[in-house]
Structure formats: structure tokens, C-alpha cells
Image (tube, rainbow, N blue to C red):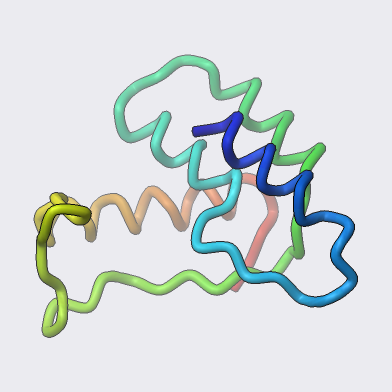
Amino acid sequence: MLERSIDLYQKHAQWASTTFFDQGIPDTLCCARLVGLSFEDEILEACRKYRNSRRVFLAPPWQEIYATDEERKQPYDEAVRTYALMVKAYETVGMRW
């Protein structure tokens, strides 16, 4: 996930226009924390090196429209916990919304 995020960053970094990504490198930090992986220092370094804007758009799960399917298998209560970890991951690297 980290390698793919870095590749996407590098591929689009030269664009002069505003670009929206549905995930950022800090998402990798959140996922590593969520599943207990221990290479946080490598991810933090990537967050510093491949920095987007300091401001991000981060939307919480919306229960009234939340549904699971073949792509989104995460139950709503787990999505809420993931969102809380995502907020902390973005705060860890100095990003705000």
C-alpha cells in the first residue's frame, strides 16, 4: 500500500493543477496501526518526504447511506473506529481539514 501511494504521488506530483486522491500516504499509517504492523518509522518518513497539502478533505462514515458490498466489506462500527484512527494518523503528520 505504501509503495502504491508513493508511486501515485510521484506520478502526479508534477501536475500544476489541483489533484484529488481518494487516499493519501497517511492512510497507510492508519492501516498499519489498525492491524498492528511495526514499520511506522518508514511510513512517517514517506509522509514527510512525499507531502501533499497541509489541508485535506476527510469525511466520516455516514450511517444513513453506509452499505457494504463486494468492495466495501468493513462493517459500519469498524468504519467509525477506522475513521478515528485516520484522524489521528493525519494529525500525526501535521495535516488538518
